[in-house]
Amino acid sequence: MSRPLLSTDSLVKRFGGLAATDGLSLSVAEGELHALIGPNGAGKTTLIGQLSGELTPDSGTILFDGRDVTRLPVHKRAQRGLARSFQITSIFPSFTALDNVALAVQAHAGHSFRFWRDAGRDRRLTDPARAVLERVGLGARADTCADALAHGEKRQLELAMALATGPRLLLLDEPMAGMGPEDSARMVELLQELKGGVTILLVEHDMDAVFALADRITVLVRGKDLASGTPAEIRNDPAVREAYLGDELEVV
Amino acid sequence: MPPTAPRTALLTRPRIALLILLAVALALPTVAHWMGEPFYVRLATRILVFALAAVSLDLILGFGGMVSFGHAAFVGIGGYAVGILFAHQSDGSTLFGFPGTVNGLIVWPLAMLAGALAALPVGAISLRTTGVPFIMITLAFAQMLFYLMTGLKAYGGDDGIALWSRSTLPAPLNIADHTTFYYVVLGLLVAALALGWRLVNSRFGRVIRGAKDNERRMAALGYPVTRYKLVAFVIAGALAGLAGGLLANATMFVGPQYLHWSRSGDLIVMVVLGGIGTLIGPVLGAAALLLLEEFVPELMDLAHAGLGEHWKIVLGPVLILLVLYARKGLWGVVAGRRP
Image (cartoon, rainbow over all chains, first blue to last red; front, side, top):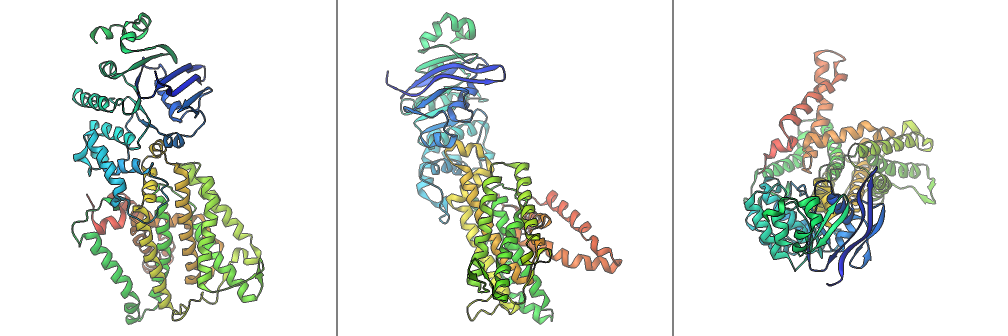
């Protein structure tokens, strides 16, 4: 196994008496697609919040690319190549799909204290943005106002924006949330294509998708790492079966 | 929104509306003199000055989502920059070792600088918050500056500073002449609009507009959002300062009332009335508000003496109707709704 791109060491986050993250040590290797699963309330979203920088852990450390980022603000982590998508679609509703992605490209094209030139005609922004839209299958919707996109398309846009920043690590928080089977299948296909090229930490409830995509899986229960391993190991882990997966695995 | 406007037709409705507005503005002094009402030139000058202040507010309010309830403070500061230097010029005293001056090429840029320098700390602190707290903090800062000016006994305190001459510009611009001054202000307003237009469509402008739409996502993309918002706030402060310097010249007076919170409220009304986030709309808003203020009381006094002082009874329903039926304000009505 190559060295971890992202790792946490004894991470703790408490809300009142509840330990949402309870001494978690997790490591995501460079190039792998690492899935994070667990029942509702297991602390998945809290963990994503800490990894992205929106929440500060009470103790423990987060290393990204060998450097301590535990106290680094959100935008600085993003600048270092840690991109995320949101569980609840978080886009720029008054911008077109293309401008949404162009804004993501712009975030990593040097500072934005440029006051004169029309950014809408700046091909250094629009060309890469268009390419990413094509890649996620939204090419034909480039000039549509993001607000007017269908739910599945908004989810694709959400991913396109994270991709457009040219990340080293993608934190995907339930990219298939609320999607129908058809859209989900396309998303799985897309993630399959991305796999290997970029390191991905995937939080997802769709077990079919997780077991189809993941190189490794970590099962989170009450803020703790219940088990980590390959999909086959997780599938056969008795503790996992008992604590969480139950009958669900019978169908996988 | 400006960046999505189709570029196909040359003469779109908004462009025609813009051309008509510009033609009206250019012809106004001639028409006023022809009508024998030169007073209208001074009224129109005041409208343009407030339009400039309202446009500067729209930059941060309409495009950046920063509802500053203290914008008049920067207008007032700009006015005082001109007024204070005038006062030193007229009594021959010095300020920090420098003599006073009425040279417009010095005092107007200084008015902008003063507006920007006041906006910097106010923005740096206020922008740590958003929403209602932001409104309240900007209001509080503006009121602090208002009372500070009230206490400036050396510069008239409550009474302010009366100017008995305008700033001077290089020949052939003699702005002691009301019509020349009108055209100078018009030129500055047009320049500010052009600058604002470039600004909101630039990379910088996109960051500001993105922050208005979804600040959390902007941070996740890697933008240090507050830094950009602060720069926008300071630019708006500088333009407001210029408007203040011009206002001092238009009214030949500077006083604390320029900084009063109700003036900040007037500026917000102008932006909302004219069309929030449209840049040109606030110009219409300024014209509408000042014309209502000028003529509605007169008309109401005709009906019943003394009724005129309650003219805001008319303003209120007009505002409510516009907010209900014209989402982009007067400019939305004039230019039509864009797809």
